[in-house]
Amino acid sequence: MLANMVAVIILASASIPQTISAELKNSETTIVPATLVKNGHLTICKLDKSSYEIVKTIKMIITAYSSTPDQTDDTPFITASNKRVADGIIANNMLPFGTKVRIPELYGDKIFTVEDRMHSRMGKYRADIWFAEYQQAKNFGAKHGIQVEVVEI
Image 1 (cartoon, rainbow, N blue to C red):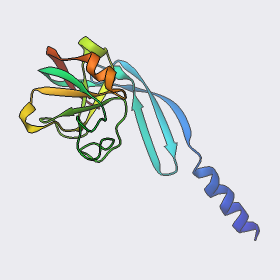
Image 2: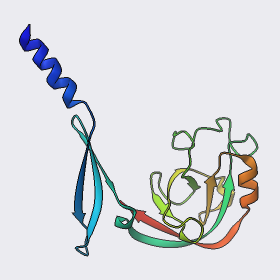
Image 3: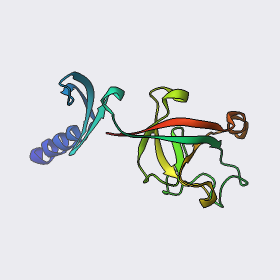
């Protein structure tokens, strides 16, 4: 019985998330702060924004949308990649799902993730940022000739 209680205590403490501070070096040998979250067997590394590397830059038209029936399909709160809409979601027809992008001219270092698609008539060189409110999306309008940085983790 005592052995079973010890095993339960060990298993319980192993499943408690632990945050570990660390420093990593990027390709230029500068120190980059990172946070390691250890949860049982899963370790997640969250890198500082400066550690993203620009893969390519693409000039696009940036527009906005919200989860209204006239702007989406019959599942307005689910993206084409089957994720729930949230801040930081972007739609694009060229980049694969999960691609991380920055739009420095409009949002600085904020990272967006491609999780949705647009109607095919919109082409490849347009990105649509999701907004929670219809009026926010409408007020955003269309921004032409905006540089989008495709980044990798």
